[in-house]
Length: 112
Length: 115
Image (cartoon, rainbow over the protein chains, first blue to last red):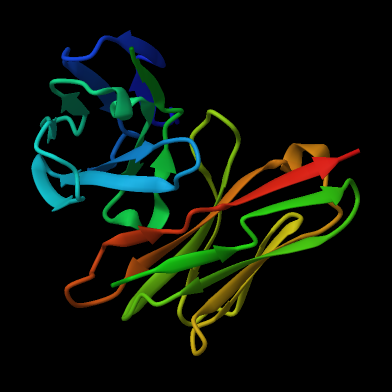
């Protein structure tokens, strides 16, 4: 059974640009969550989607948005990138809720 | 505000030694508590999951304990190996109510195992 797949693995963008990250959950999983992890900080919750609906949202500015498609794949978009957005972005999927969440390898975003 | 506090922040031990990591939480009501291992630059991998009715759960050399009354959990690593060097993250999920399904993450304990 394939795990959670995140693409791309690495990304370099310049300030002011926008970026879209992709997450393909484990087959059959309907819940997808996104997290930001910066050096020295723990995982910060961005948002969670379930059946194409945003169910929970963390305390991030509106520049961070996401969506989920009917096949449960999810995308996360960050507009007007800032240097502080440089981080490892992780996606996790679970069957129903976060009781058993499986993480992807993450996308390492560097903003220069 | 729901909180999950982990201690110590970092730990260095010699290969073959045992160690215990701590997790204290204030999440209430409580649904489950999970321990994850995260290698540098990679996604977290689940080690154990415990509900409020479980006191202990093992996964190989990893044993997690839970005291739901005092809201404390520990992760014990036996006979440490170099590959145990990683960040260990405690995650607590809320139970029925406004916190239902919401997970609170600890900042993690960074473990370094030296030969």
